[in-house]
Image 1 (spheres, one colour):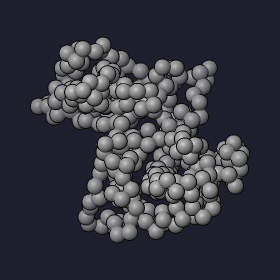
Image 2 (cartoon, rainbow, N blue to C red):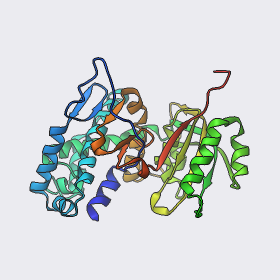
Image 3 (cartoon, one colour):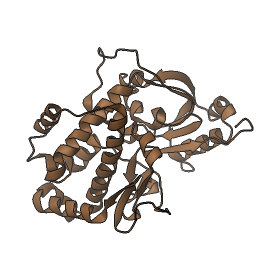
Length: 319
C-alpha cells in the first residue's frame, strides 16, 4: 500500500536482535519502548502518537482495519531511535538543518497538514522528522568521498529445494568469518565470481548498478567483519557476502558534483552512516516492537525478516 511504500522510501527497514538487558545506573526499562544510550523513549509517548495518528489521519486507520498497527508502532519507535542517533551525528559532524530546507521538504509532501500522512508521525513531530531527513542527506554528502573500503567476497543468487540464496550466503559468510585468510578461495569454491576491490562510497552511490549497495552495511562495518546483505529485496534473491579488509575515513578530495546522488538515496546512505553512533551509544528495543539490527540501524518484525548480517571474523594469534 502507498503508506508502507512512503515509510520505505524515507526510512528503510531491516534487522537482527538485541534483547532488553542491562544493569547498574542505566535508564529504567520499565515502560520503555526503546533506550538509546542514556535516553529513554517511553511506551506512553509511542502509544500517544499512534492514537493521534488514528484519530487524525485516515490513511492510518486503514492499517488498523487491516490489523497492521504493529507496522505503525514500529515505524514510530524507529523514527524516535534514529532521531537520537541523528542528533549525536549532527553534533559530532557540526551539521545543521536550515529552516528553509525543512520548509522546502514540507512543501514537497503537500505542506504541514499533509506531512503526518506522508511521514507517519504526529503533527508536533513533523518538523523534527523533516529536519532529520535533511540531516541524513548532509551526513551522507559529508562521507561520500571520505569513506573507502577494500573488500573481497562474492554475489550469491539462486534458490534450490535444499537451500535458499539467503542460507547459501550465510553459509559462505560463516566460512569466511572462520577462515578470513581463505576468503578468495572459499568464494571460488562456492562456484561464484570473486569480487576483490577498493572503492569509495561516492563511487558506488553514483553508479547505476551499485547505488543501492552504497546504502548497505558495507561502508559502516568495522574492518575484519563479514557483511552478508541483500542490497535490494525488491530485486530478487541476490545477496552479497563481503569481508571488509580495510575501511578508511579520510578528508575527502573527490568532487562528485557532476554525478549528483538523488536525495532519497542520500537519506538511505545517511541512515547507514548512523551505525557507528548506534554501536557507541547502544540501542535496546522492547521486544513488543520487534528486533534491532545494528547492521542496518533498523527495527524488523522478527529475525526471519533480517536482510543484513555482520559476522565478526574469529580472533587470530596476532590479535
